[in-house]
Image (cartoon, rainbow, N blue to C red; front, top):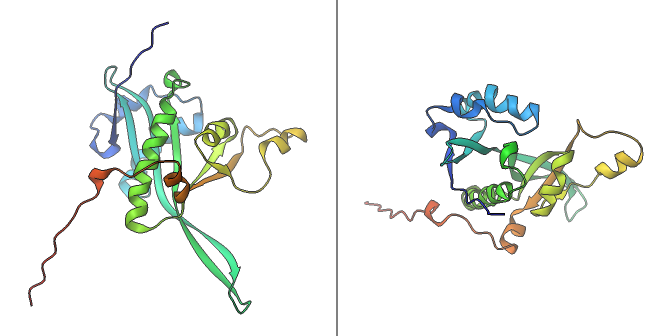
Length: 203
């Protein structure tokens, strides 16, 4: 069987002029994500509550996938050296949405896109300081995220629900991957996102 070579463009949603037509046929087999893309995505972009990037099949002029991100933080309780309670803020990049059209699934395209997320996250981490990428995964996507390095946040796993006869198709599961782990896995930020600025001060 001959293999098809795909060529994609990864572009910000704000640079696409025919987004409605481009997104109209998108179907990732998850109706909630489909609705977000078609009905709510642009509003979040205008409000700057999420930034969305589109993966476009150049040859077919078709939307193959997309992801949306924002910045968030977790607050954890801890004790200092004097055993006094305190809080620590852990900044993270929230991978709010990540989806591949059903026609492009199981072809390595999702893995290629998540690697782009990793590279762009490392640029963000360089400038503002974040500890991890955090996401909420649907049950059927957990295996994919684990394969690329994400871990389930400690708690009840889908398997434990299944053993007790509880369906998980409508649940979300918290997952994360640390910035340090990305570096250890050999990921590096986009070099062209770093700019050396010369600053002159005249007194």
